[in-house]
Amino acid sequence: MLAYTWLIPSADNVGRMEGDEDVVASMIFPRQRDVVPPERMAEILLQLHNAGLLYWYENNGEKFIQFPETSWDKHQKMVGNMKAESDFPAPEKDAYCQWFEETRHGYIHVHTGINEYKPVCNEEEEKRREEEDEEEEKRAREDRADVVIVPPDFKDVVEAFNKNIHPITPIEAEKLEAWQEDGMEPGVLIFAIEQAVLAGNRTASYINGILLNLHSEGITTRAHAEARERDRIQSKRRRKPPDPEQQPRAPTARPLTDEDRMRIQEADKLIAELSKGMVMPGEP
Image 1 (cartoon, helix red, strand yellow):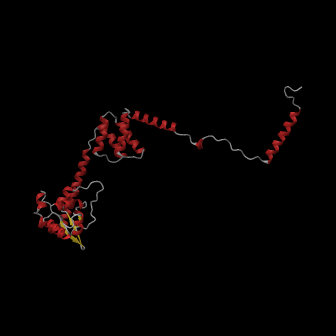
Image 2 (cartoon, helix red, strand yellow):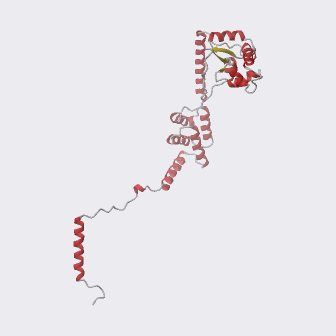
Image 3 (cartoon, one colour):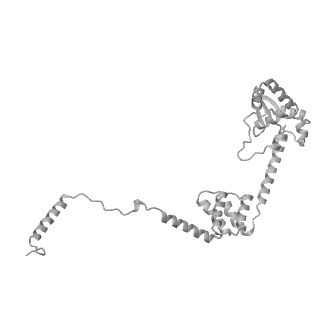
């Protein structure tokens, strides 16, 4: 039984793993190869197979292990970006169903309390199960849609969030409503949503950060929030260093032409002639 529990962490998200006895022994008994050689590992896997704890099978000459859905689906849930597919080939359906029927009264089926489960072994059963899954998913979507109960004065906030961020979840709605209950008007909640859009950060956490800053400054209305934003922009502009490209520049001197030089010479002669007849102060 200890070997069985050590096998579980090595399986992928659909309960499959390599089944070669040499590989399996090195995975779960890496320091006890002399105690659990491949031959002993094969005996252990066969015992677990016959007990209904796992399905040990071959595919194209390679061995694999499949944990039965009765136990695996009960405890393994797909979350986030977890893969819902396996890199290992699935067992042959007829052989797997036969093994299941032969071992269904064994340990795993009796002690998990879900002995009524049967694997899909024909197309009609598979189609029926798919229809049941679709109906269950439809009911789940309807249930999720009914979860968010919007008070009349909170409707505009939810609509703004749905339009600008994404369809609001119950948790996100609860957090926004908590801000309103804490004294912040719906208008300031919508203001925070709009600011998140302008900043290019359309996330509930960014919106929550804006509201946290406003609340810490005692701002609870949209008018005060907008005034604060104007002051922030103006203050930022005042602190902005002048653009050197927009500063006035001294005119650039142009080179003298021959005509300019001639005019300068004439002006010098005229000044010299006028200076001859001038009497400077203090002269007799």
